[in-house]
Image 1 (tube, rainbow, N blue to C red):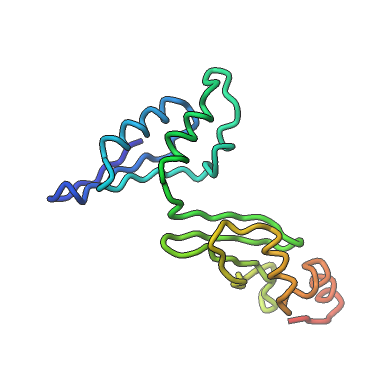
Image 2: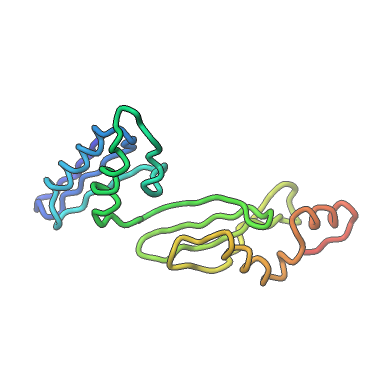
Length: 164
């Protein structure tokens, strides 16, 4: 779906393409809207599944889809303005948040000793580039609250030893 917000001055107009998929029809739409909007107006591509050109996979009906996506989207200067990545590093649940214009913010979840089955995010640091699990492991290893693995902390609590 294409959503348009207009202002009294056409310079403030914004267009957004919501949840386009990897069909070449959407690549054509993106190319057309990008040219229509021009460099002075805002054009948003909103799709939580696109990370890079590898998101395209292979489509027998569009053998050049990846190449075209690289040209139309990834080589066209679009910046990541908001992204949330969830993954595991060293057995810990982690999240990285990118919110324009700031760097990636890196968090790991830690059990809350005062509430059963509740976890709270602990800020670990930030990264200019998309963080890797190696960065997370290094940060987790440097933090005293993560000196024991999640499993070890759970065992300690079950035995009545609170590591908090």
